[in-house]
Length: 340
Image (cartoon, rainbow, N blue to C red; front, top):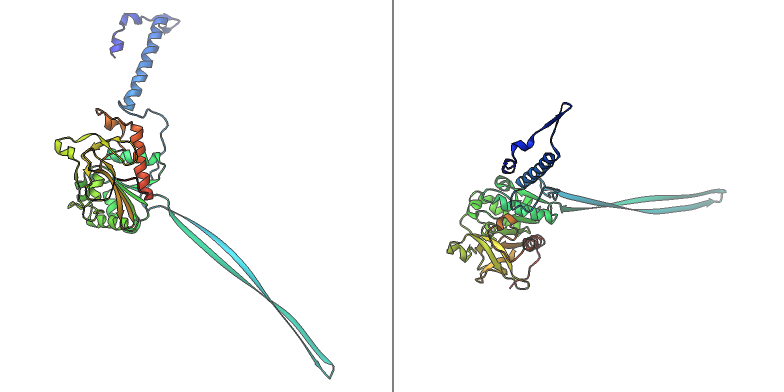
């Protein structure tokens, strides 16, 4: 509108010809410029400042409904046939010139049918989005699952409360993202956390990010306790009054990464250390609970560009997101990462 105000209204003098109104060529040119600028501004307002995605073709979501946990079943049938043939002949002769002879054959066919049925999990990942989770972190994890082309379902608080251990074990990986671990635990039933813990013990894998890392450990606030009694405190910078920052994480076999941290835990006392904070405390750990594989992360490699505004990172967004993919893939497949 400021641009329009710079153009004097007197310069928009119209000329009437044959009942039609036209503007001079100069004015028509300026009007085309104004329309172009207005369209450009409209596009920016729809996209949002700082957005990394402009309008266009989006990657198709791999999200599917939660209930029932979908499975795919394939079967194969093989049939074998065997034939048995029996023949009998006999002859009888008497002095009275009476002769008798006989022959016969019997064929028996046996058919054996063998059916093999294989059931495989069609939806490998269950992502928790219930009370206490951060909606923006849920969206960030969903974006990475879609990038990896992993089909996933989501469960809110009431849905997870209603799920049985058998239903949970229909999935390969359960992810709890960032948020508030106390709120997450307090809003779930004790039965729900017991079912999750038992499912992990029987082979379900677990990835806990930030609040999900706290929640995966022992807590008086209805934590999962996949750590056999080990509980976790905040990373030291929390006690310095810092709530979010780019933190340099070191790894045993690769370069350091600057990764987004926000009130996340450190995991002293449990698991193999995959990544360390600058003070040497564990930032990312892995271990087992029964038959299940567990990864806990106190940092957010999946953090989108909008979270990084106002911070200085030495690591690019693409590199951090690639490491988020590594954590998800490792947790899904139960593949151990290099550790100290």
